[in-house]
Image (cartoon, rainbow, N blue to C red; front, side, top):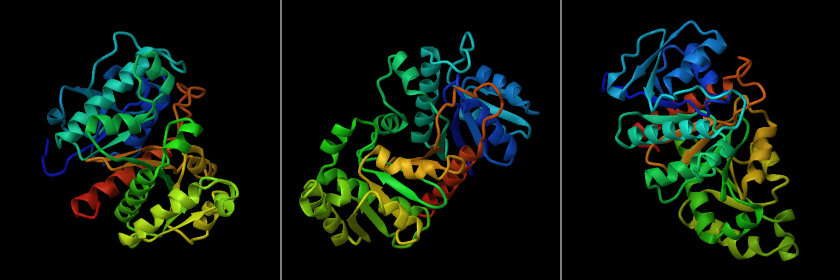
Length: 333
């Protein structure tokens, strides 16, 4: 393997979902991309057959064995399943296999063997059935990488958002939106937007309550927590403003008034992004010691195995990963 250009690691995702299929589609559509799949070679061979791709699958013991031969999808094996799991079903074996691929990719990223990680979709129930307690990729990545602060950035060509709280109940999200959590999200939003090419990015911070609290009539979190955090971020030189009402801030961002929005909880941020369409959506984890992106959709069990999946979001995630790797190499990120 050439040491000058490190490949991207692409995890296969849940073997019972569309992940393996869209990985094959993306690599066939972009044959020049320098990337390795992490996962189960037999799963990827099945995916090649499902989509009817004209390519071969080669199993690797380690990243250093890669040859990057045209027409060959190289898979760094994280363990070969003794029996292929059924497609379109929640299964513990699929959750375990997906988890093993992610673990191996993270280890290689921490060792500097790959330039970044692009993750195909996993299924949270499958993980749970396998005895894996992580609610999603973000929490795994933070834990295994030792990152002290992370945030989820999701977006498309029109709007971008970063979440203060991620995979938790709404009641826990309200409790978790502390001053420290606000500051972490705002700082990471500024850093992430800068890495994506925004000069002095305009960061809008959404309120938690209707009408951003309406001066305290509908809640005091804006007055006591969010506004002080915005003021503190401004003192650090961050171009932050708000708190803005959650029902209008994304419209304002789409109109060009802001570059990126800090949302207080999962659905507040994801509904407007996903409403714009999943095809070009991307998920970026900020705060990790390496680049990580993923498509902005799930395992799509209903169409898994049909070859009808769309790889557009994964291709976008790969493009963003390359952009962020480049920015990192230039000292921007």
